[in-house]
Amino acid sequence: MRDMEKEAFFQQLDERTDIRYAENGMKIFRLQFPRAHLRLCNVKTGFGSRDVRLQSETGDRLLPYGTAHFLEHLLFWHNGRNLYSDFFEHGALLNAFTTYTDTNFMFTSLPDRLRQTIPILLDALWNHSFDEQIIAQEKAVITSEIETALLNHQLHYHYQLIQMLSPASPAAVFPAGRKKDIEALTVCDLQEAYAAAYQPHQMTLFLIGGTEDAETLLPSQLRLENRSGSRSDRKIIPACPPLSQKVVKGDEEQPEDTWTGIQIGALPGENGLLTLKLYWDIASRILFHMDSPFFQEIRQSYRLNIQSLSADVHLSEDGGFLILHSKGAHSSAYIDVASYYITQQKNRTEAWLEYGKDSLVNAIIYDSDYVRKCFEWAAECEQYDCSFLGLYRTIQQMNSHDFLALIEAMVSSNKAVIHVPQKEVMTQ
Image (cartoon, helix red, strand yellow):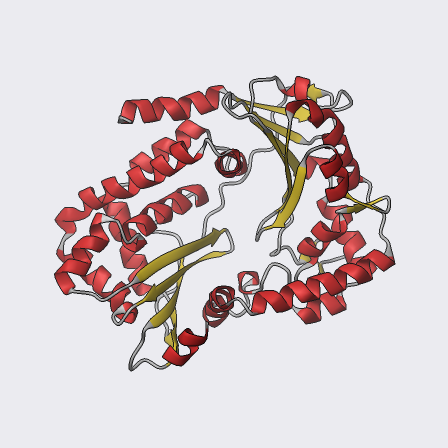
């Protein structure tokens, strides 16, 4: 697909997007997608795992970590019944997930079932009554979930690295919280968090798929109106501090399996959070995809023995972290070697950037047939008040100067490294 056709694709997504508001203030984000047989509905509220401080006129109140995730579990129980079972009877599959910044209740359904399923979900989210027996039951369920997560080596190293870099960051805590947090949670904590977080004006209902108008799919009691909502603030990540130390754990003599955490922040000047997310996504595709031209060049030039490479970038207005996992005899040296190679081959950055941009744009276009993936990009546009075409143009605007600035920031940032002993790798 040529560049003009790609730009037209994003423009067409904007033309298929309709944003309305219910009378109670809930935002409705309707994205038509003609080829989708099913309809995807997601109700999102801006209450996530980082939100452990409630503000009120009488002062701030601290909540235990895991409160948002615990509420997600509780809201599946409504009037003594489990929502999953109710939705299954309507031929719809309901799921929920809590991220660092929000909580989502998502289901796929045939279009003619939405008028039955959406009211059930909204009633459960807006009219919850707290049952101490169910709370005790979910405490046991979530404690088991946390214990199981701790057995996952990938999750363990991810959160351990953030803990090493920034011990006070909420991002260092697994979204479900810690066992001591779950034990400490009270009915009062949950009631106050629910009253603050599950207000219609703080929620967005996404409807993706098909060509029907929003009124056709939504229940009649949700009367829609056109009005401008409050625009989201374009938050700025503070510039990351200069390198103070490099924390290393494990055997550095024969590293075969290396986890590297890097504390990242804004570039010099003001960077919108969405722009920074997109730029780091592009840079990660250049640096950490094994099929990228950059990786193939550097592996051949330095004969690097690296068997696998993957990266995860976590960015929010609270701060940012890049978690890199690499395997192979030269895995621990990869970032240093890659950074040096870039400084020596600056004339190659345009070609590397072309790959990174194309990789990201193609991922959006060709994954969009899968409605869940399309929702993820729609949610990014909604959160940052950005059009799909604006998203595309931001990607295309990244230049060599921006890429080199990211590399410089990565090199000078705080780092934490975990070298996994070979005997531990063998038991995983």
